[in-house]
Length: 273
Image 1: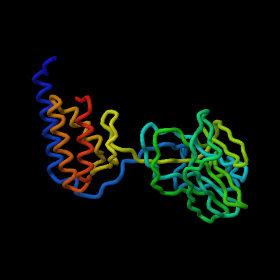
Image 2: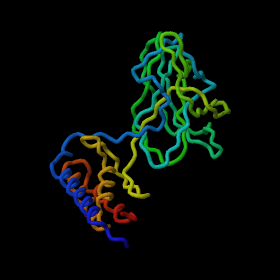
Image 3: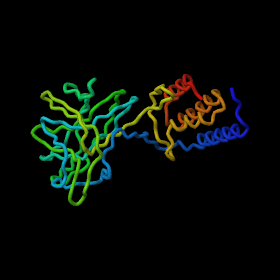
Image 4: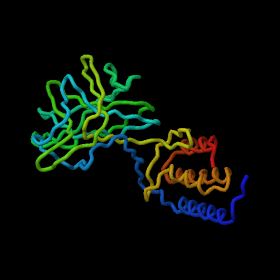
């Protein structure tokens, strides 16, 4: 084992002091939010506040025989918190989004709908808005599709381009297609969609089952654990640092005692530092 240089030891000691100060001044005793991850975002220069004239926008048809939507892959358990896109219905009925699994060949499953949700609706026949739904859908690692479907008797489209007052082109993404009557496909198209989610705190490959959250200043629980690892002299100081950190997180109501134990169990199994 190579001994740490005096300078490195001093630096690590200073890091531990900073972490200790951070977790003891009570700065966690406030409202926190989940650490969102972007799963798909092909909006390009558009924002969720952008509006397109329906007569100046074009894209993929959303009809009874064609449900289009993005393909996405999750590498760890993820809770989907938002699905949205620039979609427009011709009869002003809300568009539906279906979550379907991918088959082994990569195409969307025609027969299986894991969940379906109704998007918001601006009830505006002139303009296309970003329509979305907030949800709390936990999905295991794997590949899925979020397919946009019309209400019975309605039809619409998913915006990919626009001309006129706002010249626009979304990003190019993999989009799957399902015809519920028995056909499916996959290709690259322009489609303005966004999917957001929340992941858990992982230590190496160990899933703590604890949702990562954003603390004041933008720091997450994962950031704190990684800071403990960076500052640790050895395994013992790493474990102790995480123990102190999770104790303060529990006292401030950020995590429960059970979640504290789950994090520490994963730390105990990890090959760190």
